[in-house]
Image (tube, rainbow, N blue to C red; front, side, top):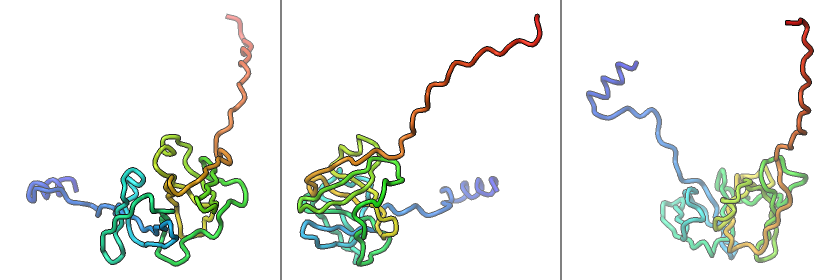
Amino acid sequence: MGDFLATLFRTRGTPVKTRAPASTHKKVVIVLGSKKPVRGYLSPARLGQIDPVDLLTPAGEHQEIALTSIRSIYFVRDFADDFEPERKAFLSRPKLDGLWLRLRYLDGETLEGVVPNDLLSLLDSGLQITPPDPNSTTDRIFIPRTALSEVTVLGVVGIARRKPAAAPAAAQPRLFND
């Protein structure tokens, strides 16, 4: 097989691609400050670092939306009408690793979620949370800082507990004299 690929490479001048590159654009529903949803595709790689957000609509049109006019960006599996998670809070302590947060929007509405326990990601211009409803079509939600009035840490979840210090091992008795 290796000889075949080497021959193919020499004859054509370019290597053979084994699979197509993955798409960088994800399905999203952007909810504006007026609570109007806008569906489309965007690249999450630099989300929160660039303003405005570049959105590709399902019709193939390019739209730029200012980050200050966005309430939330829902990363969804499909463009269904019920993209918002039914549950806004966890029923019990979450099982995911990270910081368990309660977010309060400017209009007073609250939402709980889990973010990675990484202070550098919290310094961006927004938060990407995992929502409390695992059965919804929403995988994660990005909320710009400008849409929030308060962020409260409810707990740190999934930290490995420290093990007690081991007692020094006793010397093993010698069976034979040397």
